Structures are given as C-alpha cells and as structure tokens.
Image 1: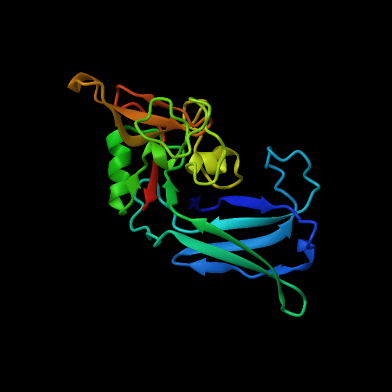
Image 2: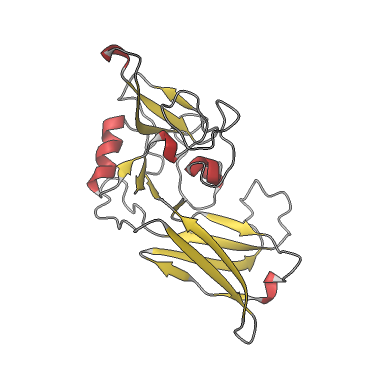
Length: 232
C-alpha cells in the first residue's frame, strides 16, 4: 500500500555494506521508487538517533495537486512487485530488495468535510472512498477490517497487509507528504462502511482514525472529517 511522498528505511545488514552501492530508480505505471543512502530527515520524530545512516526508499506517484478541483488522476494497475537493485562500482548487482504494492491512496490534505463531499471527490477522478479494511486491522466498530486482526480492539497492530494505517503508522509524521491534521487529535477519515443495527434509524457511516486505527459510528454525515481515496 502506498501514496505519493511516503518513505521507509532499510537498515544496513551485516552481510552487505549498502553505503557502497548505487540504486537506480524503478518505475511502473505512474509510480516511481527511488533509494538513496542518507541520514533521516530531522523532522522524522520517531527516529531518535538522527546520525545513523540508512537506505531510504521513497514512493512517488499519482496525487491530487488541487484539492478543490483535482481533475484526472492516473489509476495504477495494481498489485505490482517493485524490485530495487544495489550495484557495486563495476555495475554488478549485489543486493535485491523487492516489495509489493497492492493499493494506491490519494489524500485530500487537511480538508475536513462531510461524507458525501469526500465520496464525490474520490469518484470525480475514478477512485473510491476507502473502506475500514483498507486502513486498519483493529476491529472496534467497523463491519470488516484487514486480517489477521489486531489483538487490541481499538488499536491497530503494525503489520504489512494490515491496512494503510497499520503499515505506515502515523501519517502526519512523514515530512512533506501533506496528510492533514484535521480537527481531531486522532486524525480521522470518513469511510464508505456503514453500521447496521436492524433499523433504518441506526444506519450510520463509519469513521476510522489514523493515530490509533480504531473505528467508530458517526451519526452526522455532514460532520467534518478527512478524506482518503484508493484504487483498486
């Protein structure tokens, strides 16, 4: 799962000195993956020792350049496996690192809006509003989430394949990626899931929060939460 501007680090393994290798960019259907040996960004507050080098891998791809009128946004054909190759000075491949992207996400910055507004925004460029299972493996009040489930009902478990928030953690912390803060300390997003309790009166939509991965029922569709779209 990926979005424009996100990044992760590969620590130097004992079997190979990654600092001595060069890494060519890899591109596929509008998504570009680049890697460089570098220190962390000073704004990466989850990394305590900023002096330690690592191989940083960046994702770049389709994004909303205008949150009011995004126009056409490319839909990558996913899933796809990206393979980075680390080469020595003679051009010989010494290390390969591969990972799969199953979905691509486009966010709406810090715009808190109602459910119907975000739904229409995603549809305007051919994406869909996220489901809770696209985001989290914390069961809480969502009808369906990613598996295997988190052992904590209201908190996601960090896990590849466990949903966008479970994979990447607190998205606001990533430098220059632009995920909005919203008006809520948990940074919550509308989903297209609904909670049913046997009557029309309690047919309410679900909101999922990136800080914890928990989901809850929201009775007011016009209340302002953040927007996040996905394909496929």
